[in-house]
Image (cartoon, rainbow, N blue to C red):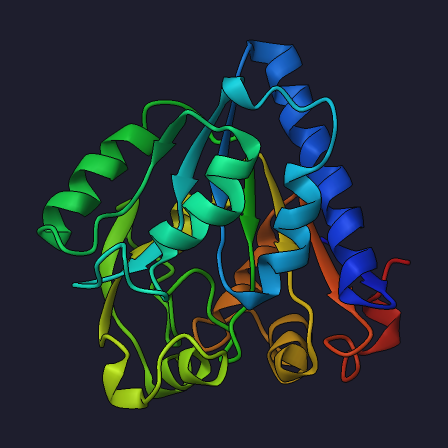
Length: 249
């Protein structure tokens, strides 16, 4: 795993976008298409803005999969991750093949159907973030590192739900759904390449826990350290508690 630190979120986003675009272009060059996984949340704003504006990416040959979505939340809700991806990635980039997680539908059926689609061929690159509680997708601690299912229904812990209020997606804790559909840890790790974007001071403790402590379900994103081709993009604030010896450049 490589850890890179940048002065601010703009620089971080541009650098991560260069790597992401390169991974997409390489996949298209090698086998005619690219299959990607996309994350959401405030931490991805600058990255996705830079990625969709990167010249030379043949988005018509990109197939996108959705990391997670709240159970029971309509796509019209401001916090819907489907709404987020449509507005910040799918429509700006011009992606025509994508698989969204429908939170209002039977969650078990959504897990099954989208799971079949993602299992049909290898994923080239996964774009992920790290939650304030260290979660990877919506795999809150203690995360399930063992299930082989591509998607599962998870219970959201209070720290995760409070993060959503803190970011302004919901007015109160009671408004945040208590369950979500999430891509599993094992499915994320199947991606050939992982680009993890995690800026902001509020992520500093999670970054330290996940990259300095043991690899453990208590620190879900710590599992990224087992992947052979992962790059983590931090800004100075999210890296502020991290041992400098762990930083690659």
